[in-house]
Each structure stands twice: as structure tokens, then as C-alpha cells.
Image (cartoon, rainbow, N blue to C red; front, side):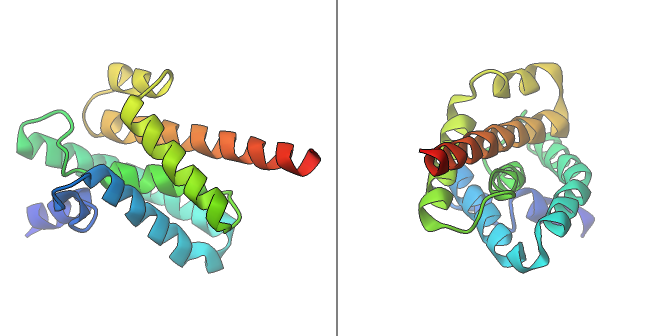
Length: 153
């Protein structure tokens, strides 16, 4: 029972089992959770993310060990939390949310520095989760800077 719950969590409630682009589906799950938690306010959303990080890393690691792979494609809980972080400080505007979604997916797929260093410095669930959290943080930073620049210009 516990193994099934961990598998369900690690797969983003099954999103990771969708055949085409499971990481994109996991990111969409993060977007949905962000949207559903908007009424909570940013402080509680941030607390939710912090509280979810360690159990998510444990679940991702357990799923990877069970699958016998470093980062199995069905494990998308990391994309869920990375996307959630990317959107955390963003106002709910469709163009900006779409831009954040595309940028996050690009960073998650290409894994430029410093995203790529997370998989080299950490192992297991921490490596699986941290590269997506770094991609989410970079996405949030870039999108927020763009919003400020557009407001100034």
C-alpha cells in the first residue's frame, strides 16, 4: 500500500504515465495546483512548496530506486513542484503564465548551467527534484524581470 502511494505521488497522481511528454503533463499539474491555491495567498503557497519539498524528494528517490533508473520518465512530481515554483510569484495573467510554462519546460529539457549542476552534485531524489526547482527559480526570476522591464518601458 505504501509503495503504491509513493508511486502515485512520484508520478504526479498518474500524470507521469501519460505516454506523450510526461514531463509536460507534470508541469501542467503544477500549473493547476498553483491556480487552485491562488486564493491562499503567496505566503501560504510558498509554505506549501517548502513543506512538500522533502517528501517529494523522498518519493522521487523511492520511485527511481524501485524502477532501477536515475530519473525515470514517469517520475514527474519534480516537474509539478518546479512549475509551481516558477509561477509562485507571478500574477495570474494568461500570457505570462504561458511564457513561464514554455520557459520552464525549455530549461527542464535543455538543463543549462546551473540546472545541470544539480544532477552532478546530488544523487537520488534530491538530484531529481533540485534540477527542476532550480529551473523553476530561474524561470520565476526571468519572467519577473521581464514583467518589471515591460512596466518601465
